[in-house]
Image (cartoon, rainbow, N blue to C red):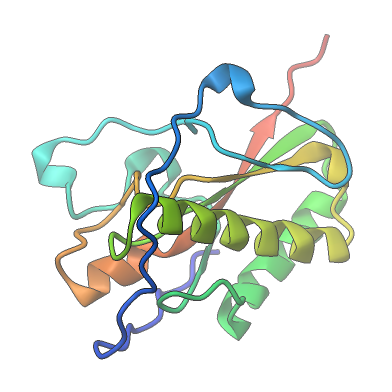
Amino acid sequence: VVNAAPAEPETQSPVMVTAAQPAVKTADVQTASAPAPAVTAAAPRAQKTSSQSAQESPMFSNTPKAYFAFNKYVLTDTSKETLDAVAKKLQNAGDVDILIIGHTDSAGTLEYNQKLSEKRAKEVYDYLVNKGVKVHSMRYYGMGKTQPVANNATAKGRAKNRRVEVIELQVPSI
């Protein structure tokens, strides 16, 4: 279930943070159980062509998404409806890993957007835990403004970029 991105108020400006974002290596990623830590790492990303720059990545086009208002990390009612359907499916899922990946639009600094994306992902993680999804199968990540799916030059594009994707990965049997 994919919901429409909310409209963005054009009069707001982001809170700016001036410190630089530290580099994070993939080796720093940890997968812990309850509660899962926010992790900054490279998530899978489809390669874009110039014709896809303002379109959603085909790799995750059917991935459930929660959208957020500008500079916010509180779930909207529409996003809660989407996540309720996700939770219902995942409560009875067998061997799956769930990646919850938070994103922002391009307004603000790298550091500010990184923290905001982590807060958005944590909000979705907490919501799914409260709906009965197994904690040990989920990890959440913040990607900041590094992976836009739409053009940040327009309000509509920025609204699509303010999202959290819930990605279900099948765990291979051993």
